[in-house]
Amino acid sequence: MNKSVYITQTNCITPLGFDVNSNWDALQQGKSGIQLHKNVGNLEQFYASIVSTAQLDEVFNKTVFPFSVSDRKFTKLEKMLLLALLPLVEKNNISNRTAFVFSTTKGNISSLELESNPVKEAELAFLAKKISSLFGFTTEPIVLSNACVSGVLAIAVAKRMIQVGVYDDAFILAGDEVTEFVLSGFNSFQAMSEMPCKPYDSDRNGVTLGEATAAVYLTSDKNKVEANAIKICGDGAINDANHISGPSRTGEGLFRSIESALMEANITVKEIDYISAHGTATLYNDEMEAIAFNRLHLQNVPVNSLKGFYGHTLGASGLLETVIAIESAKRNQLILSKGFQNDGTTQSIAVIKENITAEINYFLKTASGFGGCNTAVIFEKIN
Image (cartoon, one colour):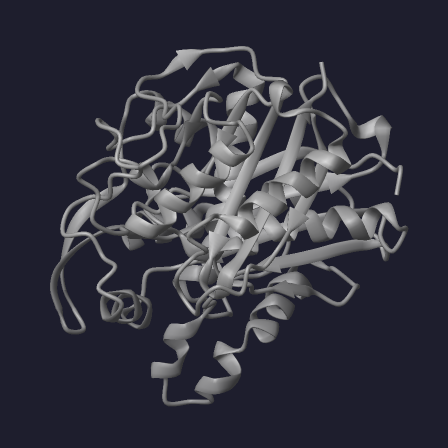
């Protein structure tokens, strides 16, 4: 388990841009993908961060893939997944010891509305196999669908598999889209905000949904590691089994996940320079996170949630937010937590209010989700 694993390349497709640089520029300018949308299912209007179908089609049709796309039909999510993964596959070889890890919560759930073979099209394993086979992966796809920790957990699982020698390297791909099914589900919980979400703020009143895809490449080959590469130092994934949708009020699962990650990374909380948190802007999630961070004496570490920019992208959120956190570390710049103005949790945390320059060597990514799942991963920037 002493083998070091690194992230050497990243990419993302979001309403703010179709690569990392365009997303970073948009975040620097304070732009948000969240807009008002109308008349989907039973919802007359709602706020969400949704990728423009017209823009997506334009970019997709101009992109040269290593396989023919003219004779195939792809869903919106599939187009976003293919675009996210392509630059990584172009730069890194795929062997029979390369893992393909796919993270999602709902996948092609909208396929259930189709008349022809809807169940098969909606199966997560079917989608994973479809994407991986197009790019020539020979290993069986690994599907991770564990609520909203899926994207972060995928990093932990891929890292462990490389460390024990099952694989030499891995491509992780994550994605989810905003559908009537997802909107109806969150609306039934009365969890959706009537305005763009405001994580950790005293006026927050719910989640805003979003859609995105993200991809990262993991390797243990030090010859592929360049300056500013990111090492995955430690991880923890603890389920507190508190409630089908509500987190532990004491933050027990998150507390233990971070504690486990710190132990493996062999560092102290004083060495953590930044926390990219889950921050859904629901009353219980944000409160639970603030409690967990205080229990670990992390309350003074700069923390943000990117949900105010992207909305909650479900199974893609953890990987997308890791991609942006990696960019923050490489550039030594912290992004504000959009929508935050006044403390809205009973225990104070250091929510970032403006873009600032700061030295980032170690950072922590956390996620929590339905069913009591929690995951924490610690990363180190290699100087």
